[in-house]
Image 1 (cartoon, rainbow, N blue to C red):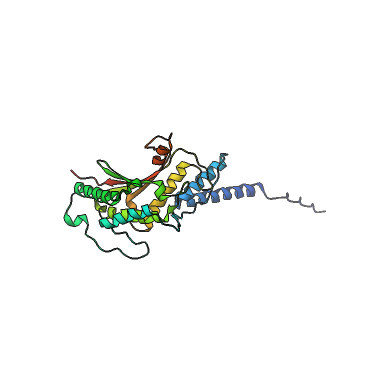
Image 2: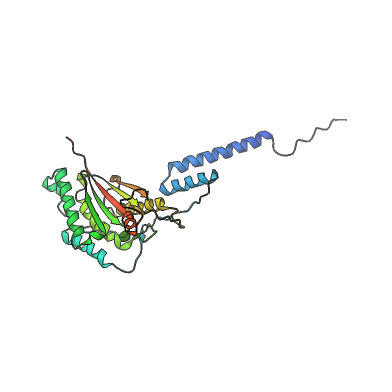
Length: 271
């Protein structure tokens, strides 16, 4: 009688299991490669948070919606005064609804040197900002190689929020209209976010460092999307509470530390 062949073992062969595991790992690897090739600021943060969670560190991943404009229904007289003094000085406000501003002469037409143009830029900004005593909200500081426009966060953002106040957009637009006239004499703009040392932990921002980054980033996004200045000549930085200009032991000092700076860097002059 013919001998009956033994029944094959149940389940998949060992090599099939190993092969499936290998393919799963390869798929995960290529997905990660693709995510790195298309990373942006928000996705990078989410990936970092995912890795932290995988390593056992408690954290959370939140999808940040980059909507830099905070809608408001009321207007502020002080903010309007800043806009008006800049316009009275002669700096037109670029349109953000498709209309083009009128053509104006630029410093290049007069053959200014970098030093002369930088000095004129400072004078124009100083006249536009300080006329009428509005330096309470925007301070201007001149150094050898830079001009610092120091905005108190009160004029740009609500407390604990990185969305730009709608009225602040006109102020930034008016100031950028002056700066853009001197663009060829400038190396770059650096937008710096700063806070005081009072801890925060909200649904949107885990700490002051993250809040300062998003504030600087939203100012950049507005300037870029409104075509107010070349984006490739703008840098952003967030310091959180780590770059104070006054003591954090008093309410007055903390108010000074809650600020957003636009640092205008002068172009280098070839000797």
